[in-house]
Image 1 (cartoon, rainbow, N blue to C red):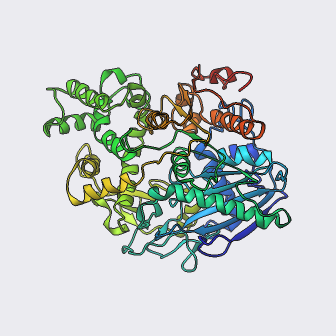
Image 2 (cartoon, helix red, strand yellow):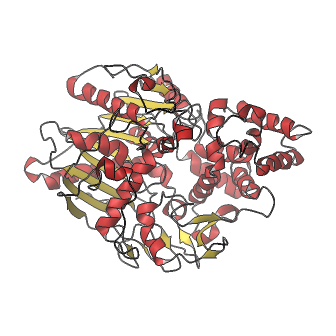
Length: 580
């Protein structure tokens, strides 16, 4: 067994109404309501797993009736098989991360294949199932996942319970996460409060997941062991943070574990090239509300409420003008000034327009608070800028979470509050623009020169990608309308850096594609965009053909896409040819 495991391996069988890819729900079941718990306070491990799979499918894929999943692209067949899960630990880490291997009964021993993926965002260990599992399991590949040190194993400080290996609540034993320095009340989040900088180790988490997957293949098929990178093709993939983890792992793969990499909308940066997420996220959190008040964004979804600019956004303009940040005597001029500042730092209008939803949903602040606490290795009661996590009552007052809320966290949460009954509190005032103090504090941690700012920038520097080996095939695909991880700050400079170093990555640019396929189920968003997942599946197909049949890798290209419109997705909207 791998020496990095932090405890025993849990093995389960999934057949006869249960399976690896959908927990027995199938496409129709995934399109329905979340599977219920017979007892909401004490759900079984099987119920938790099925609901976690459901939640993570909905977090990544557009399963809506117009989205085309199952007809234009993708499929969710029943895939019986076995799962092996464990906690693992990278050297020096305070908290463990999860690893999970899915091995289908139809594993193809004649074309040994292991797909490895880290979760997107800060999701739990099933956070890449709609990508890696959906592509790999039906074709007979084993799939290995990791939550990369983030995940949904929230620790409740009031009841002193955490998530056990099977996802159920426990007070002791092997837990996914328990903070070393606990506050008196509230909720501790692994990504924010682990005491580590997990992002700096995402590449190592992925490498360990690959090693775990190979070891579990040895366990599942001992007569055919050993399974090694020399006799098993290991393909690494991921979306968003998971894609960034894949590329970070590629830069650390000195032992030639990986056969190929497919990265979709990666959160990635190279030292001296592009911009790290914390930089542009904290900038956007401060400036973008005011910039979106500019009249050119009047038609943009989420930029107006009943045809009116949100009062908080106009207040942000006035606040920044009073601080001397923005020019202009009125709101219109101040909005233009904010827009000019964003353009000067690399934002384009496509990304800004799409990011209106990120502002409306308060995602920049949620991301910034979590990442700042992680980079500074803060305890639950000492988060920067006065932030904290807690359940609340109807009046918004912090309270202890009830048992049913706690029980569902592992299955229902995304790894970053708000959500699943946990809110982000603090960093606000009683003004018309209440979130301004918190986001300005988060921005100062990037632009300032005090000890915390220097420590945060040092932690971010540790997350930069290294150059992969020169013969590792890499395909990167990214939407041009991405307002969460803009292509100009991530994929474009990363690919340019690789090319400058003599590497030959394949770069696919996808017009009309934004960051969150799951948002496309909302007609107002789906009408204007195309999904990204089809390009990941095609890229994996082309990578597989290259590795197994020696076919030439595809060329870098910009697809001729068109918005889906109000009708069901048609393949022609994706700009994919008959040979793709």
